[in-house]
Image (cartoon, rainbow, N blue to C red; front, side):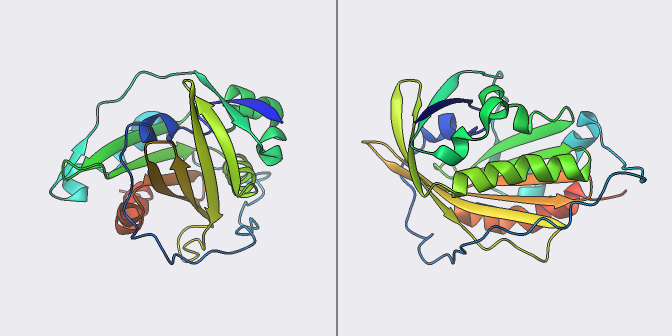
Length: 231
């Protein structure tokens, strides 16, 4: 079965096409067979939810000073709406129109930053979104459930076939209200790249950190602390 989904669903795919193979330091990361429960998505009815503007979210992103020496922020690339074709993943197909338009993560209040590390192929990206807890939970939850529901499938991006493998990981339950985490392997004829992606919802804020597994683990706590600051 084929379904077209916007690159926002697999937003890191284009970046990974230019990244060399990852090292094997991700071996042994524990996995689970069920997704993190989502009871923390509080009912929005009857309560005022404080939402942050895109400008406010931008100030809460990590910067080079927060990350330390060796990090360089990549210039923001123009938004692209090129489509990729997903083959062999019914779970992604079931997302239907939302996936086809990229609407699942098209929250109006958002900010993003991408960094390279040490002049190497290692990269880490941070995304922040603000919306009602229910909308954030449903949006990111459906994507993680769909992607991890298919242990192996294929995407075709820009004419390049990419073999995908997904592995559900144990999320950091001590952080935020809800958590999701997965390990993705992108393989082409030339190379294979491993990316970790962890999402944390804290109230009306959603944080997603993606990239080299070691860098995601190193900066996740720091990213959440700055994103949820009240000062």
